[in-house]
Image 1 (cartoon, rainbow, N blue to C red):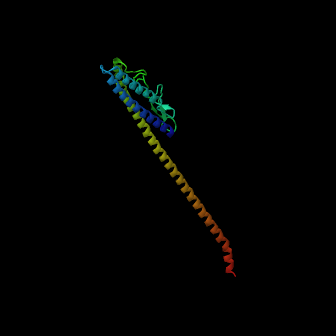
Image 2: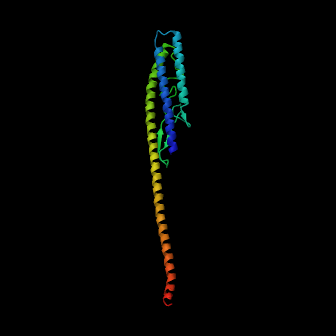
Image 3: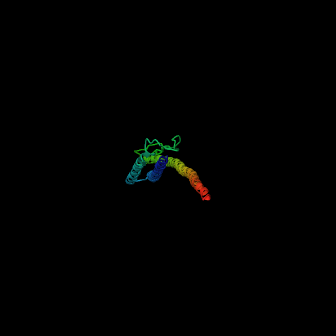
Length: 212
């Protein structure tokens, strides 16, 4: 159970770190798209902005595809989320839903081929980037909530395990003390028995000595 929770915490933390990177990339893309909405922009300048924009766009694809921990990726296309065991019996679980941030997703609406090579495309891209920034912010908040829940439960499991170990230890100590007391009582009885037998053996000799 603890391993399952540890894996969930780590996978969620990786997703959050990658999501924050996506957010930073989108902010940089916004600057490029906003600059490209200037109708007076020269062709060469627009082309340079477009190349920067596309490079940032492609980095988002790379980040989301590689935001993986131990086989779990909460951000890539087709992600299923992650379910961690919440108790030793396996009857309770904690689930972290996927927060897909791949290009063209409902969160990052920037398309795989999005560009700002023309004024019209720059305006459309700016709209898509702004929507994506808001969506990613919401996704990060949800991941943060799930990460906190997993961490809190992991702490509880650790304390519960310590309490159980302490309780078992106390029971064992109590049983050992009880058995030790029984052993001491038995040894005392045996010693008294030996002494009584010794006295009994000596009594006839004492009686005979009186007639000598």
